[in-house]
Image (cartoon, rainbow, N blue to C red):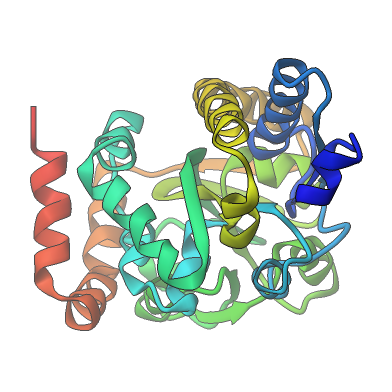
Length: 316
């Protein structure tokens, strides 16, 4: 870094992620790039690699630890496997009812405490990014717990999500996001859970006949920076990165809901996938069926974490 500054070369920042550029994450990365390069007059450059061009879900964290990439935006589910099981709070089914609920955690003291913990693994957390609420898809409607029986459901690498699927009678299959569409098309898995924007942009509607609007879970990301890279920046450079990312995240979070609405509209218009909505009774039966996922996480991280989340959600 010091040598790059002496020779007048711009600071190059590699930003790798695993989704399409027209998703909330992809658009936020592009916004960050534009803001940072403008404010530093090109002295800091961001090279973005979408769609797992550099690294997949399985190897991007290792790449960061080796210094092969500077910025990642991993799903919050991934941090549990890195020794931060408390991040699996975000994976609890039917935890959040509205986007305002999510904000109470991500923008409050609990969210900041979670980001601070990442320093143990040489990562600096700059903030949270929404993708939206997850819905269940398969080649049949998933309206009742019995509908999941025997299905192979692709999941992220999260013990809580895997426990959720087993509680419903399904078999969880941990696969990288970049492999999900192909796995659905070839029958390696039968179904999955995703925000509608991911479902649409990854063309999962071409290989899934039914989408059930369960809204059972939230998917979001943490923006993390390689700590040694961060320490080698000047104070001014860190300020530029922090302010650009803060603005990009606020913008990204404001458009995520809109993109999911647009994707749902496009999906309905395509006529390729049947779309189902839960009745209040079906919603209640699914909530009751996945309670073991809550009990399991409470045992692993302590009931106090769940109590803190509930307290934050119930605060005015």
